[in-house]
Picture: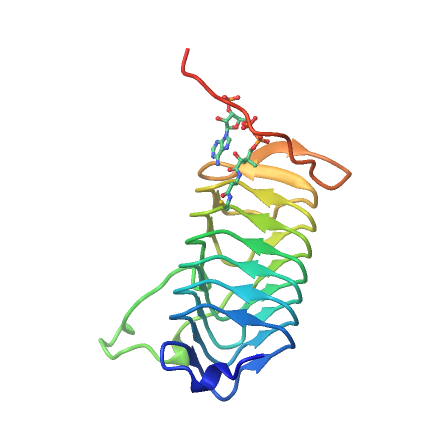
Length: 177
Ligand SMILES: CC(C)(COP(=O)(O)OP(=O)(O)OC[C@H]1O[C@@H](n2cnc3c(N)ncnc32)[C@H](O)[C@@H]1OP(=O)(O)O)[C@@H](O)C(=O)NCCC(=O)NCCS
């Protein structure tokens, strides 16, 4: 595995724990987090402090993983997925001073193993996305997503709920009526 800390266009701070076989693309920014074996991280991804990413995950380009997010093994994160950890964000306190770490409450989010999150999805804080679930492109997830379900829309609603892992169908053409 290359020593990513030596590469000028990759930002990995000393406190990051990288597993074996991790692959990082250019312009990633990782600090205070851990990334499991054989996980791939695409270009322009930022992973903040206190994030845990499991083994054999794929994090596609331009996604933002904020503090308090836990991603279990074999999870797929599409392009430009945004996680949220502060439900009521403020730049300053009531007295006008900049907020500190003590002035807001982080809400944690968990993505269970083998779940997939489509491109452009926004995952509100404090939710759990169940094992093997599939979140549609552009979804705004505001509630817990049951295991092996397919959700989509804003706010996201269940399209399909299955007991078994989601089956992927073949390519199809769609037409307006
Ligand atoms: C959500 C998703 C899994 C559904 O796929 P599917 O099970 O094959 O469902 P269908 O295409 O049959 O669509 C079922 C209905 O949901 C709608 N729908 C599909 N995807 C949607 C989405 N992302 N958001 C909102 N509605 C969606 C369809 O328009 C259709 O509605 P209709 O019956 O009124 O026409 C898929 O469309 C999707 O968004 N996948 C994520 C792809 C992605 O981001 N990949 C990232 C790497 S490239």
